[in-house]
Length: 316
Image 1: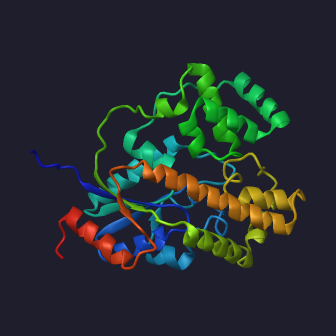
Image 2 (image 1 turned 180 degrees about the vertical axis):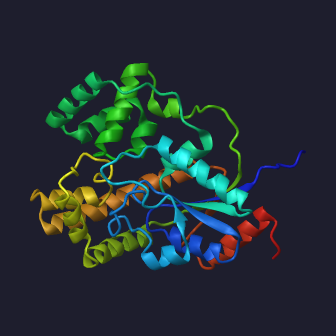
């Protein structure tokens, strides 16, 4: 069998609050790695507390590429991420080091490794009609429609994720085929790196749910609402932007609009984060070539280190 001559790369994936950043930083101290963030919220400047962005001290000690690369008024797509990540990975490889991509945005990981499908361009008329239906029925009702037409896509998309629900239904109308089916096909070009996938998947979700709630309360204590007030004060941001639809920010925006009280904001923020984790876990279970590590089991760093040593051929 021929030896795979592609340079190595590491994907460290997991649901929110599963300890990915801490593990990535620990592994960087043991191997010649450079870290790249795979997170659709961390790309935005000013979304710091509510996105659980690594703090300044962590980023100074362990720099992450692809953090703070967009203004929150600007959109950022999976195609943008793929271009940026490929360029950053090439630079890391040219420096003789190994890129470690760490995050929980499954769409970005998939777009990077598998490429992007040739999906149809947006249809303003269909989008306008779907938005009108949502204004009457609510986005959860359109999500239920999507669940009937494309269960796999609906499982990955939140019941209030207006942008992604709208796009999935739009693609079905334009092509007559489920979005999930079309996303399985990419350009067919072999990924330039050989990849070790590590998936942090807790066998039981109780501890993860507790960490999610505790972290949300820590965010509130750290000034999360003041952060969102500063974003609102800019005057050019609104609730329909991808950055503001990020989990936590959407609920904070509702609260500051006076639509929900403080207690409801906290509860909805925690619930939305748990739902995000559920979707991330569902996606990760479909990554059959990933090595699963339960973050609740002891010696996580040692188990991950052993996997990297075997993959990289590093001395024990």
